[in-house]
Structure formats: structure tokens, C-alpha cells
Image (cartoon, rainbow, N blue to C red; front, top):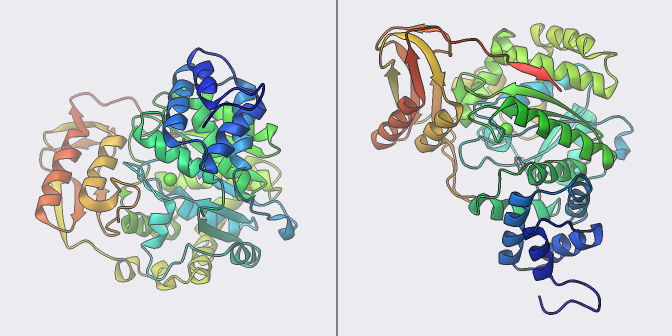
Length: 440
Ligand code: URA
Ligand code: CA
């Protein structure tokens, strides 16, 4: 950018002010964000400002203003025609986090309406879109009109983030991802809340992950992030409620796109296990937010029933059919979903208690097997990934099956196995159990 107009600081001056610990006004943040989206502020200036913001932070007002500017960088999805409270569920990025695939139809089965704008995965965390797209025929590129109609008729719709909705976040996140500026609470808050506000849902349950596989490494960081998400959401007129869930080890047993879809179906069939528990807890809170249950506890009771009696699976089948996917996946996932060419069972390195199954490490192992992306536009191998056979705290004997790896060939299996073993710890003493989910 050239010189500022009379009395207006240049972009360079805005960068310098943030570098020195000062604040920007709403108007200045608008110029920065909207100028960047319009191509007037170049990448290098935005990247420099992001680094300054990452180090110096943003105050409470700046975070709201930044978020608001990001929302106004593009279109907003208008869901008001549905005439009811529309719910969304978001996770701050987990490993083996199959929750959305179960919770969305579960809430729909209990009479709620879920409309979610979702992204692809990057790095070691999986994206809901990649998981859904592993179902043959499943379309995520619905028009806004189709999205709204489907949410109305089926009770659940998930579409890909379009370049028209919150384009500032797409472009800023791409810069943050390669300039070491992702780990900043205000930047993460603005990124998530702007997408949620632009996505149109009235009430959003955010599952803030805490642990090695998450942005928030400690419970304190996760709770601070959760409080900011709720505060900024409220400032922009949205009801955001958060839970903090453990991501020191992967949530489910499956890590990888088709493998996670199969696990979601198995969870909707058996209605038991760690994943089912988290899904019931989250669905219950969403039903309470949407007015479908008087309290979270009452919502949990409804969700537990709908999971156990097959209505959640039925809603999943309707959802898959509505988006063009092969609904037989709800019957026999192994028959319908793509499979990797080769498998290998990895055994425990020694006897003892499994003390560590580092989520980030397992995510990176799955990515190395082909389940994740190394660059934004890379393709994923839908069948690749890991199925864990042991959980932290369980006793294992040397060479007991720890995990089954799925990949296209032996070189990938070697690399995946090396990474997986680096993520695993076995000790003589039984480790302390960790809480799975806490409210904020
Ligand atoms: N998830 C997002 O959408 N944005 C961030 O910045 C971090 C996690
Ligand atoms: Ca996710």
C-alpha cells in the first residue's frame, strides 16, 4: 500500500503499532482485513501483522472487532427461513475425533436441526469433510439453497466452506499455517467465531480439545480459549457454549477418514464406549441450547435413548442419502467404504501398562500412512489410517496387538509404524485416569 490518506495511518504503521504492543481501532482492523481480502494489502504485510498480534496479543475489544471484520469479508449464510433455532457443533481440531459424524444425526433424531459449514483437515488433525467424502457419492458442495432445504427436511446438512463465506479466515489461516502464527488465543478465537457467525447457526457447541494433539496443550489454556469463544460469540449475537475434552490420546479407536466413518456407524449400532459417551454428552448440551430439552441432563437422556434404539443410525442414513452418498454404509461400512491395499498389526514394544498414546503423534502417523494432508491441496487416501487396539491405562504384554495400520504400500507402513511407536509409552505403573469431558 502507498501512503495513507490524510490522517489515516498506513498499513506499515498499523503493523508497527501492534509490534510495539499498541491497539488497533475497529476502523483500522476493517482496513487491514477487508483490504487484505480485496488484494490491496499484500500477504507479507498481513503475515507481519499476524506475527505481531501473535506475540503481543489482542485485547478484548480488538478480538471482537477483528472477528466482526472477518465476518464482513464475505457472505453470511441466512438460516432464518427455517424459523427455528439452528445448531452447529464445532471442534477445535482433534485426532480420531469422530464426534460430529455421530452427534449431527443424533441431534436430528431428537428433533434438533444441525447445519454445519465444515473444512478439510490439515496437518495431523482430521477434517469432517474428508471423512464424509470417503463415503462413495457423498457431495459436500451443496448450494446454499440446497443446504437450507436439506437442513429443513432432513434435520442435518454439512457443506464445504465456500470461498464466499469468511474468505478472510481462509486466506489468513493459510498464512498462519506457514508462518508459525497459529498458536494465539485471540487469532484462534477470531478464526473460529467468524466462521460460526458467517455460517448462520444460532447456537454453537464448541468442543475445545485439550492435550498433546490439540492447540491448547493444557486444561487452563483450553478453558481460557473456551471463555473467549463464548464472550466473542455473545458480542456478535451468537450463543456459544463450550466443553473441554481430553485429546492427550485419540478420542476414538479409529484415526483416518473411512476408518472413522466405520467407527461412527459401529458406535451408532452398539451405543456403547468412550466415543458414544462423549457424543451423548455433547448432543444433550446441544438439545438444551436449541430448546429441545429443558436441561443438558434431560438432553442427554433423550440422546442416549435415540442412540440405543437406532433412531440416530436412521437419521445418519437419511443424511447420507440426502447428500448423494451410498446409504448402505449404515448397514455394512466394510462393504461400501474404500480400503487401503495393505495392513500391518503393530505389537506392544514391551509388557506393562500403556501410559501414553500421544494424540498428535498418532495423528502424524496416520497422516504419514496417507490419511492426512501435508499441503492444503494434497489428496488424502480415504482408506488409510490406524485402528488402535489398546487405550491408555490398559495392561499390555509384549507383542500384543497395539494397532492395525492401513496404507497403500510397505514403505508407507514402515514410516507410519515408526511414528506410531514414537507416540507410544509403556510403564510398569498404571497411569492416573484423565477426565474425558468437562463443562466450561
Ligand atoms: N481452528 C480454526 O478454525 N482456526 C484456528 O485458528 C484454529 C483452529
Ligand atoms: Ca474435527
